[in-house]
Image 1 (cartoon, one colour):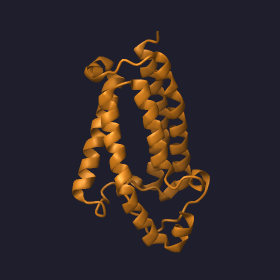
Image 2: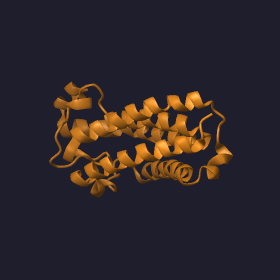
Image 3: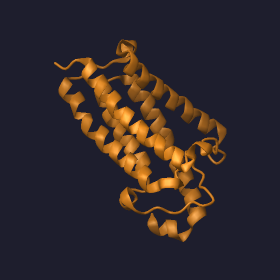
Image 4: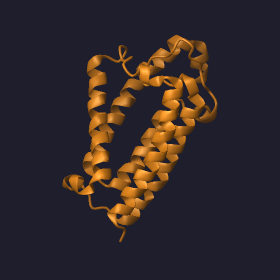
Length: 186
């Protein structure tokens, strides 16, 4: 039987590496300044997304810091199923980081585009229109399998659902910015 700390420390290690890489790209792109550019999606929608993301983030952090604090929503899963979570976790993290790398300075946190924004069709963008979203979704599946907790799953599902709902709004923004070039890319 695998000790809970094995899963916890594995997740902490992978998360710390990915956070360090992601923060580098967010800072390089100045994407932090775009966090409040949520006019297009509306304050209520942006607030709902933030609440679900915060629930997800806090529950994962609680698990990292003190797993017993999340025992109330733990799901008894066999160790083999939890170990399977490593594959989607790493695949999703790779897709996300690769997407960040190819986006470079085009990265924004909101759905708004920058004035100097360019259409990226290289790297994972050759196969997936939104590799950051796809990578995050795949990564979340792995994380939820490893943590094996229904509250983490529910908050992640609600947050990712909000992202899926807002994607058509982002698509309209990209069509407005790039026109036929983006239509052909799609």
